[in-house]
Length: 541
Ligand code: AMP
Image 1 (spheres, rainbow, N blue to C red):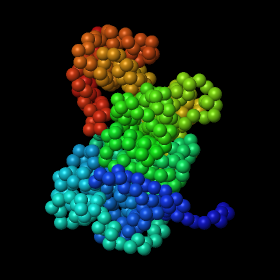
Image 2: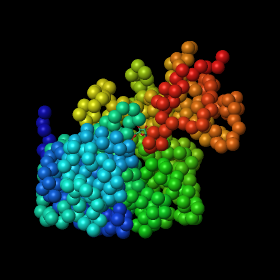
Image 3: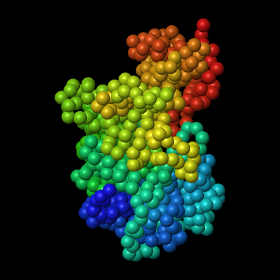
Image 4: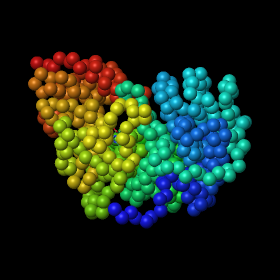
């Protein structure tokens, strides 16, 4: 082998902020603080404070490999922590404060967090958990002395005090690029949460990939407001790719109500944003009510769960905003696919373009995808065949923290747990979660498709489709429905509604009408519970 002669320079997270400080030193990072007022400073100031914070972490005894947790919203202080912690070789462990207390305690214990940084509006949460976190030796309120929470904790600090005591004379250490940098736990609906451990190299490569023109397409001319929280897979990488390209960052803090978000969009001239569907549904309702329009917003990225087709339309037709669909998961840092059109699609009708934009998108360089059947055979990319979706790439996990779940890869591929189609242009569309797909006579039926049809009936408020054991077909679909108040609907009428909308053999064999359906803490349907409850359903006839 003849080795090339290029420099051996590791890909390190701190270099992203260092780059922004040097080349976009006057570009702003704007935050609606938890204390209330808008805070405004530059990437140069952010970098300096991140260094002072890194010194403070070292002073309180944080070393390479230590886990430092955050219970925090999107703010400049959280951004500084992202860089300060991983910059010294420690690990930024972001925790979703919306989880149940037991889950939070499990996660902190499993991660063996040494320090927890928290936003002051989460003080009541800290008060409840602090006594049950034996690994944590410091609690840091992310505020100044004037707003120090009244917590009776011996080892309580204020973040501003920590920063003030340092001078910022620190060179980011030249770490190995495979050094662990971040830790996120998956919010699994079964079993305990599992930790996904990113490294510097995966994070920087993911940032490069995410910034590409057909992906987030973000530049030094953009103003980016991540509405997706920094505890949800690192706000989809935006705290890394914004400094990488020198985009202005706007951080909404804890005020996620539509009016506060809208005010920031307008006041800071936001051009690009990202978030889960619910955020936009709430914002639309408020904007309709107050007859508002966006003056600078051009693009939003929707992911985390399927973007309703009506949302893509409403963004375009009512607000002149291009809504782009993305798919990923915690195990993928998170980005896997992005729904940007190709040149040839621009010549097609609006409806044809709309059909493509509803799909979860095509993969970016760095992630490979395939779909397989039950026997592991690769299925064709014809947009029709659907099977288990497997991925691989330099920002995809190869196993969970501390070996939880054992060997997760299948022949070097990560099974996503999603079921999907891929078309000949490479666009992937999710049809189900693999554990929810209904297996009838060796063929698969998408429970999501059945639910979407049921919900489209005017009398239906909510619906779940599950597979129930069947003597002849292995499994058949059972539809469980909650009707709208006062609505009158029977089994025959609802089943007739499926005719012509799906293949005959997809039509559910029976319908149960119930008062309510079980949900997870994040509002997703708890199909496990439904399968437990109705698994013994007796089929008619
Ligand atoms: P999480 O790791 O909590 O972000 O969850 C990842 C899972 O969310 C994926 O495996 C999908 O099941 C789902 N998901 C994410 N984005 C989308 C999307 N655009 N459409 C449908 N499902 C999605």
